[in-house]
Length: 147
Image (cartoon, rainbow, N blue to C red; front, side):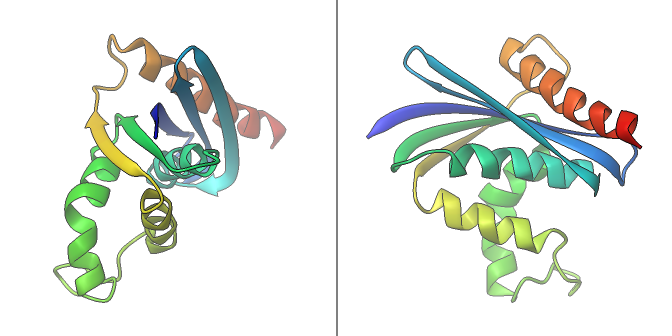
């Protein structure tokens, strides 16, 4: 099984507003950068979309370390999702889970791989995270300039 590092980030100009996502896939000496946008979204959705797109790009089951600066993303996938599923995609207060469409897609994709989730401090000294942030912000910024 290949061992892959997936670094992710999302950005939003306004929340909600135009957003961008980015991810960097690393396997041995290979590096693949990807990014995209949504015209009207939230930062949390862009954080999730970055992870989805990175996992979707993998053509075979891999051992994947996902690096994110989003505690929402990391905690959602590693701590909260089991409870949401048990409660029929409801929170502890009985409200519908926000972004359940993306959570379901992310859970489906993580089921195809052996995933490990790591949190890193955003806008700090993590070069990989800073590169993803740069790409995600560029994608979001380009949407603002097209308005």
